[in-house]
Length: 253
Image 1 (cartoon, rainbow, N blue to C red):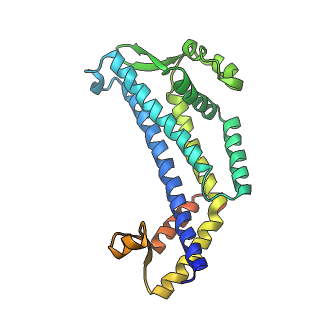
Image 2: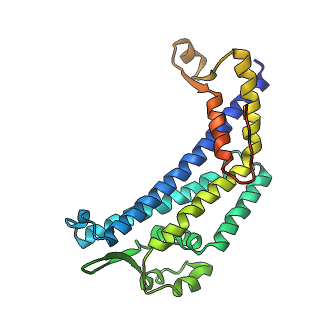
Image 3: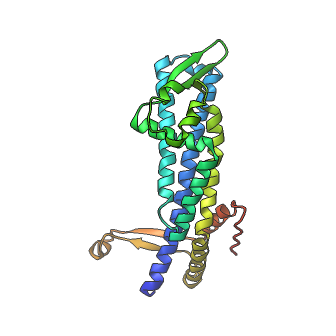
């Protein structure tokens, strides 16, 4: 195999890895969001699991789950701007993020709330209890002590005095999924090219093949290496994911 062929094939492996990372990070953010949502709903339903928790513990756990959710979302955004997007597609993706930000209050609110947590304080401070329901809430007064809400400050000022995050989380989670799926559009051609390269070498090798990763030639001679497999099933799975996008139709045979 010539060096260019190796480089092309290795690039194909890397773009599949980029796609898999995009998918896994999306799942991580959504799982964290669902965990927070479930915690707040179970609290509202007076689930007996909270019987042995005092108010401070309830507040601390809520803030921990919220921090996990928002930090994973920010990591997802940062990682999404890297990797296998061309220069033009990176600009398209940045524009896409801006459109999501501009058109969804929950997106704007949680994006800025992450800054609030990072630079100021934790938002959950109040537990409101009754015989039937228990609410973990955010006080608007506390939020407005933070000076860096920027253009959405007026929207924050219009929120209720004690804010229930549950409806905003419910609205925000599908947005994360939609953003991830939309990003796939920008690297669909690299996935198609990866499939073409893989088919060629699967046929030549008469089966699966892979890459050998080793720190050096001497380590290879000492049998210190890892074999990284590359199979068509990885690409077929990526195609299945891409077809979740309404404007992508990828068929590999």
